[in-house]
Amino acid sequence: MRRWWPFALLLLALAGLQFKLWLGEGALGEARVLEERVADQRRENARLQQRNDALSAEVEDLKSGEAAVEDRARSELGMIKPGETFYRVVEPAGATPPAAEAPRDAGEGGE
Image (cartoon, rainbow, N blue to C red; front, side, top):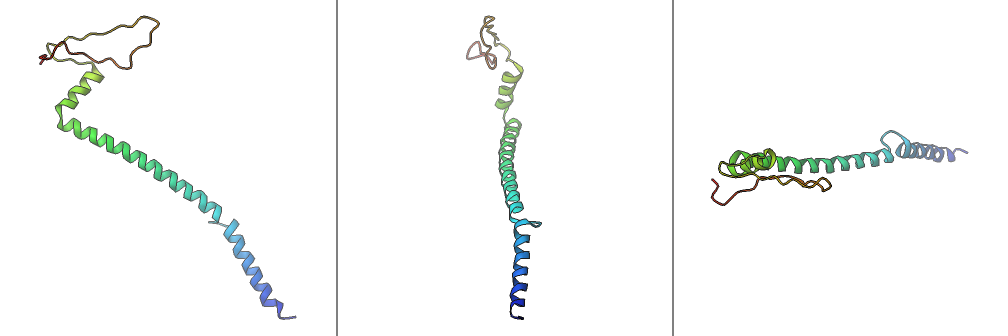
């Protein structure tokens, strides 16, 4: 009769460990969810890093190049150089408006 006692104790310990593995705190399901969250966060970090790199390059370009400042002033603020003529094309009422209006040079030697 005493022979089954150690076997029963080992079986009970195994059942307890299996319960903890599958359903307890830090179980496999919870670990899988956490791995997915880490992967999502890594993708978001990579996307934001690319955005930061692009913004850093733009800042560097604006700091070092006068051409970039001029281009931005022309496209975003509608500024023109002295001697240039600005033309605005007005579309008919039913037409779709252009995406962006940019000033156009009157000639090559407009500086």
